[in-house]
Length: 244
Length: 212
Ligand SMILES: [Fe+2]
Ligand SMILES: [Fe+2]
Image (cartoon, rainbow over all chains, first blue to last red):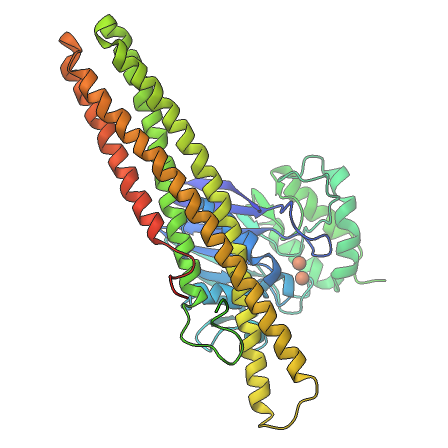
């Protein structure tokens, strides 16, 4: 089973990170799922692949009531992001799934009806959850051509999808980045190969560098916290991507 | 028959959606029992101190408070293993949900062929039916294990009830502390009743309905 850890709490405003599955089959990439709660409602960021649904669902149940999950945010269209959609909808047919307009007619191949999807325009927009207005931040071409990150102004947390992802060796299973220089080697190859556009990367770095971010939460690997957030943005800005 | 919802012969079986919902309800109930067990543990600690203050008049009460404390710890442990079991049953139910989805899609594919012969279809259907049966049996197995564990917990809670009642009797011999000891033992009885009710609810939430 995966672990469910609280990474931010202020009253009923809470971020849960669902991470590290010791029983995960080795051929399936490890993913992080994040649940944002406010006012009795919650939104699940990148709920993950169909194979890991049981692990995510039961970890979530241990910490909160899954009936409260009213929405899903799909940063992009990859199977490790959203192929579990049909099972979440089986449990709660009224779920709303927020995703880029690019993918809102592709994701129904994973399940859902016309009412399920809420398309985000390229410039992003806000997503209501309880008392919060979360911001969908454009991150196109990083790596997907229709790609969003999700910013919570109150918690100062940015969910950054595949940006910041690191493919860590199994023994390195800390929730937060402990030693940036040691950590970043596991992120380098991933970013060079999966990210396709230096120009898009530049724009993203400029956009997030001026945002107030305490935690940058990627979909794979450890969370960047405090100074490591700026360190990561600088590092990413310097990296040349999109070459084999 | 052990796989009532096998391919193409699917009667109105309980939907997996409601199975997951049942697991969630069970899990919420388990959480509330854990919280109550924690409360009993604290109450028992207080009762132990109270009995110490009351001295020889409350020796029996002190012994019972100790037992109640052990009861709360045993209950917490049983709830932890129940919780692990419900997590595993999520896997079993999810597998069944996936299989049903595949079945549904396969069924539509066959229908779309409008009676044309499909080479190898028999094999595919047999395989799908086998997979469904296997997954269903696993869930049934799980339901049994879960139920047996609940029965064991029921017995433990029964014992807790007996302890609380005995504490009430002992409280009567508490001399000048009698009324405060009585209050404590009444509180014990109340929370144990609460656990009993939760447990009854839990027992009603079966993964598989009788007769299916
Ligand atoms: Fe991706
Ligand atoms: Fe990914």
